[in-house]
Structure formats: structure tokens, C-alpha cells
Amino acid sequence: MGNTHKIAVLGGDGIGPEITEATLAVLDAAEKKYGFTTQRTAIPWNGGMYLRGESVTGEMLDTLAQYEAILFGAVGHPEVTSGRPERDIIIGMRRRLDMYVNLRPIVLYQDAMTPLKGKAAKDIDFVIVRENTEDLYANDGWRRFEGTPREEVLTEQRFTRPGIERIIRYGFEVARSRPRKKLTLVDKSNAVPVMGLMRTVLAEIGKEFPDVQYEAAYVDVTAMWMVLKPEQYDTIVTTNMFGDILSDLAGGLVGGIGVGASGNIRPGATSMFEPIHGSAPKYAGQGVASPVGTIGALAMLLDHVGEREAGAAVDRALRRCFADKRIKGVEAGTHRTSEVAQMVAATVAAG
Image 1 (cartoon, one colour):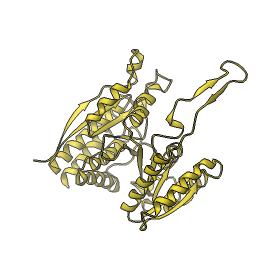
Image 2 (image 1 turned 90 degrees about the vertical axis):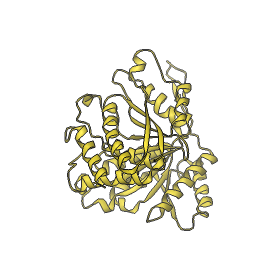
Image 3 (image 1 turned 60 degrees about the horizontal axis):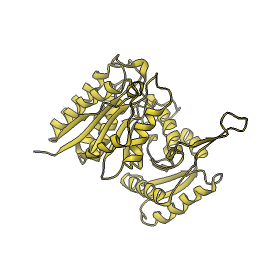
Image 4 (image 1 turned 60 degrees about the vertical axis):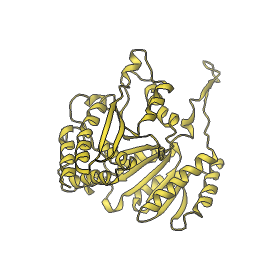
């Protein structure tokens, strides 16, 4: 009898419930093939709560700590425009449960999916390790002189040595696990001098990883080279804000953010896995949204809970379905949502 894992499933808004439901079919296949089980609890939080005058509180977020992992769809309701559900739920989880790593693999599944001339899958295969709890996202900011010509909005860009140390160490560990063993720290320390602490910490921790080649680069130059020469990157570690922007740029290199998966990780503790796209309300209920990003997130979730063989099999199945062109793309309507999940599930089952 295999292991049993407690996971929460939070479909959210828009296409979120559809893509998570489809992805569970892939999880069913993985369980059967690799001999483990999951206890799944549906969590009904979404933007619609806010229309009813309800909200997700810190105490509610604390209940998620009982699960090994969370499979998340998307949140964002067209009639709730303030962004509050996103901050309460997504950023709330990251802060409350100290999910300090945002891990985003950048994978080109088919050569034809990149807009870059002359680039192929072998050229675009890297990972972005984004710090997930500090920087400009760490507080809501404040206003001064509201309603006057002097009105100001302010927020604090805050970094701590413990926060920098743990994300850079995690970045080194990821780099060490990859064949090229190369780490690039991305900052803007030439214009924001306090970011120099990151380079100091990079050099300190680098001594613990003599097998990993490391370097530091500025974010603007990195954005340029990511487009011109993506093959030079293997593992990137960076700040919360820069990681958010660079990972969407990287998503564009591999066919759009509909491809991408991410993990919000606290090593050894409750972590959340999600596609990087939004709730796409215009496609909700039609069964045409691609679950590729969510299936990729499932592969990461399985690895996190210790089912590494199953996680690798889901990742391989996705790659195989793209490679033999059963999956032709991720644009809405290219395939039915359930069709993509069934193809991947069948490939997992076949081994």
C-alpha cells in the first residue's frame, strides 16, 4: 500500500474550476500507476465571496497548514476590480504560510511555439527562482495628502538578510540539481544600491557550492539577453518584483503564459502549485481553456510531496504529447479542456 497525501484543491474563479477538475484526471492516472493515494478537499474560496460581502481571512488561510500541498486554479472576478481577492488569497497564502520560493520552470514544449527566430527547445530550458515574501509585495503601502495637489502614494521595498540568504541558497540547490549547474543572480544594484547585499550574500553562499558556476547581472540587461540569447540561462534567482516580470517575459518565449506552471514553496511544509495565467472569465464554462499549466503544476506538486517518480512521469507525458503533436497548442479552443487532460492521463498510464 502506498502513501496517502492530503491535498487541498482550490479552483477559484473563471476557468480555474475547469482546469483543476481536468487536472485531477491526470492525478487519478498517476495514483493508479504509481501506487499512492490522495485525500482531496475542495476549498470554495473565490472572487464571488467578495460580491457577497465575505472575504478570506488570515485565520482561514491558517487552516491550509493541515495539507501537504494545494492545487490552485486561478482567482479574479470581473465584477471585483480592486485586486483584493488576489491579494487576500494568493499573496495571503504566500505570506501567511511563508511560501518564500516561487519556482517557475521555463520549458519550450515545441520548437514552433517560440516567437524567437532560430531558437528551439534545446535553447530555452531554464528555471526562475523568485523570492516570494519580501520586496514591494510585502505591504500595501499608504497615501499622503490625499485629494490635494501634493498627493503621494508610497510603499517600502524591503529586503532582509535572512530572506536573501534562504532564497539564494535555494537557488544554488536548484542549480546544483540541474546538468549545467549554473546560477545567475538578477538585481538592479547599480541603481538601487541596497540590492548590493544580494551580491554579498551570493558570494558568501557560493563558497558552499564549489560545483556551481555563479554570476550576477542587472535586470534590464537580463531581459534583453533572455530574448536574444536565452540559451545562456540555466537557473535564475531574483527578487519578488523582478521575478514576476521576468517569468512572464519568459512565458512569452515558450508560447505564452498559458504554458507556464509555478510552485509557491516552503520546503518541507505546505506549498501551493498553480498555472501562471489568470482566470480568463470570457472562456469560463466553455470547456476550451488549456489545462497545460495546471498539469505542469501537478507535476511539481507530486515532486514536493515525495512522489517524484509520478511527478517526473506527468512532466514526461506533457512533453511527449507536445512532441508527437497530439497537443497542438494552448490557445483557448485548440482542444477541449478535458481532451488535453485525457491525453496526458493516458500517456501517464501507459508509462
